[in-house]
Amino acid sequence: MTLQPPTAVRSAREKSPVQEKIAMFMQNSAGAQDPRNLGNLEYGRPVVGSKTEARGLRAHAHVFREILELCEIIHTDGDIRFVDDDGVERIGILFGDLFRIYTIISDKCVGLLLRARKHSLVTFEGETLFQRRDDNTPIFLTKPIAVIKQQLTASIKGEDHTVPWHTGVVGNGAT
Image (cartoon, rainbow, N blue to C red; front, side):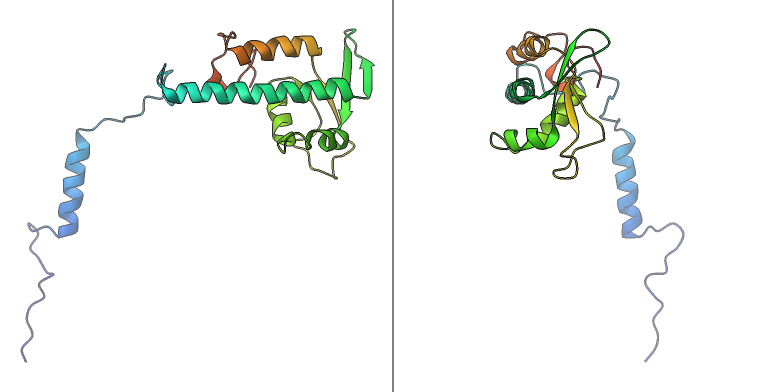
């Protein structure tokens, strides 16, 4: 038996199949440009008038209807009432009470509270609320219910053109 020279040893000018694929990839991608234009305001948003946009608008309206229903429950069933320094009556409810009332309607109580807080409609202490642990945490409406209804109804009907559905922002631009 004689040993043959290994075929893997190549001259400096020869390329391995892996090197050839890498070179081909680099050549193909050299002319390509970054497809993402993050500065474009339309980036990541559905095409205007598309079915995707219509579904998004319907979903947006549905969430706002649920937030409005949650705020109305806080207003009607809230047993914590006081007048703040500005002379505005604030209405609140304990999280445990709200959770027991609202979970009969929907299982999204905490998620809707977080979304309502994001839109400056309610306020409560803590990052999020947990059943039993935070049952005694008060949740307050930040605005009179008439203002909340007006604001959310305009968004539900699509009349609030200052705030597109995909920004996740209502009213004053706070996120």
